[in-house]
Length: 217
Image (tube, rainbow, N blue to C red; front, side, top):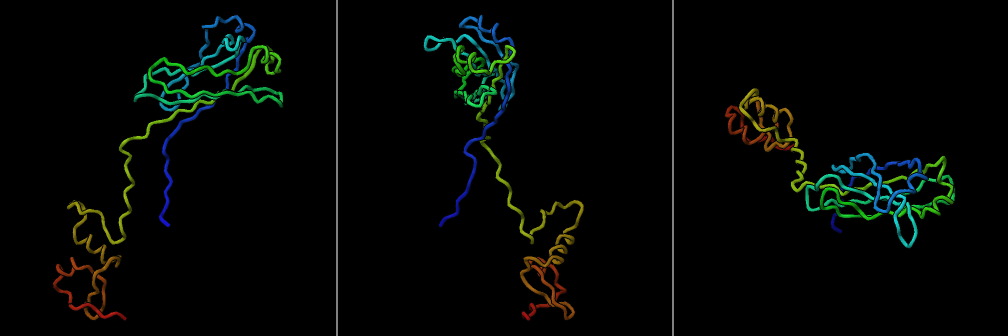
């Protein structure tokens, strides 16, 4: 059976922000085209805003909703991102959340609205405390994978020394290191009755060494 490998097909950046909507009763007066921006949110190499409204009309009802806005122009054809919003409530039965995905192609572009709850349902949910409620928003951005990802260089074998630069250490020092390690030896030389592992490159230089190689013991 062939070997299998695992690698990331995409990379993503993710950030979670808690937004507290203070003065909810006043936001009910927002016009249908109005929205309130969050501070700038850096995620995935771009800056974003989350915008809030309490006056989105859908299905003949007023909804509390949020959307994601890209503040800078994309560095490629588009930037793909997702916004997930969850209402925070002390009620054990509350599991209200919604999400939207969007490919942003220009600065200032917005996603579709994420509908949280109808205003009447929000006000009956118990999530509003002291005229405020909290929404948890998760922003996920697909990040760029460089075209020229450098492959990790393979480790050098034990019998290979760094390239000789001609500076600092001498060539004889490098050859001496190979002899000291004894790794990757091509032959075994006899010198004064003693056997030493060596390399053919060295044996051709060292004419004082006797030949032939020792027989294996």
